[in-house]
Length: 97
Image (spheres, rainbow, N blue to C red):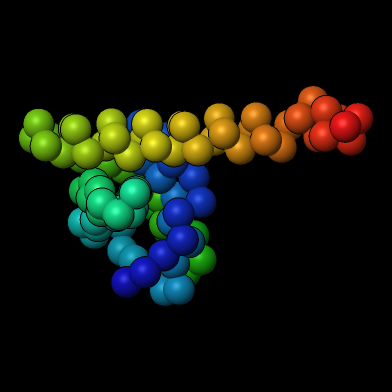
């Protein structure tokens, strides 16, 4: 099932889904970064009336931990880049040019 990642941190994420998933369901959150797909395993810990699920990550092996770190690093770098480009000061600077 496809979903839209809406929030992510080191513990888990929220994914908007077209249909509900039961609490306890094992899921795999995948993100494609620079042509490479990073997959992290998790479990559904909460559901929002078929609109989305709260997922807790389970990174137990070295490879899962590496994937989670890489995914979070990419998200953080993307957020920082967005903030630099779209912050109030960045917008003001563009207006003054």
